[in-house]
Image (cartoon, rainbow, N blue to C red; front, top):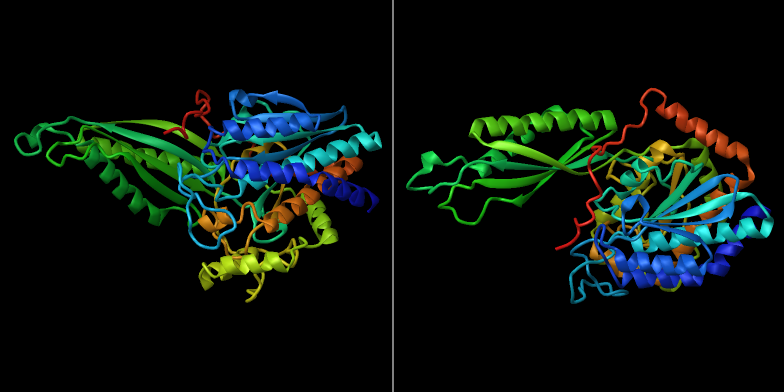
Length: 473
């Protein structure tokens, strides 16, 4: 208990620079791999806090690592700071009011995610120094979680090879241990090349790349009936071949996003989608080439670390929201549907409660929510390092992820309180591991058991480099 109280006190004492960092990053939303201003701000704070800094991690200009301490176990605390397109929004306003500019916004709370993780790392750094404990804490600034798979590239480069455990979090409506449930995925561009011709005067001479894509989509749609119910396949046209209907489109490109419950399932689905693309090319007498853009693994849980995190949550209790926080959250809820709000409770596996705008409870570890699953590149870290994640209560219950409502709450006092609260949880788990070698041993044994029959194979092609220009216009 003394250790916990001390590390929580250190978080409280050091919170202000990290709240300011979070607000600064909120005001400079940058897309995947282009977080140059954001990482510069993170570097500035790491330097001020006395971390040893490594830049250009895994050859990614916007990835950074700060380390403190000597010898002993290595504890990694993971942060992010990438934004999303189309989610610009004025802060603190419960109505849709975009800010003039490029339209980007922190609609997933990553401005909080990076700052809160660094706050936890800074508190652990000071705890090590003040108590003369051997050990190292690292803050990993990880870009491009939104579709860029940066952590997968970082894992492949060996950036986590000497890490003993990894800790992270994500903004959420509730305070809880994050259930280790995500989908492995990959993004692949399919480019079909045929032959252009005059669509009226010489249609017989044309071979339509657009027809090939449409046939591919039909084939994949028929495949959906015959794939696991928890798998997902999405697509978007990158180049439909032009806007002239009297021209047979000679080249067209479509991006497919394939998701599966685990890596073996992902590989099987991708093989089937590729066969459908080959069939579409055969039917249209076109050729098809593919380019993998990114890929991530599914999350692996870690029971010993999850129990340690739940223990910290139960002792600390929910965030200290006040009446003003609840009033603002209630205004946000007025912009949401009853279904939005009910869905948030169901996702956490707890009864729906009306008239509750903010989390006032800790979700039990045994609560199992409805299966509404996305993907994250934290998954790749979890295959090579025992990993645990928290949910930090930083926004009104029912707020959809990737929404203007979430952006609107990103600089609010309630978000700041939730960020500091979850930093205490992460720092508490780190201290538990640093002061109890048996926790690290148990966590590593758990990971070894989970991967014994299915060792990690990076889903990225060996020759694929980080797509550092993907977010540029």
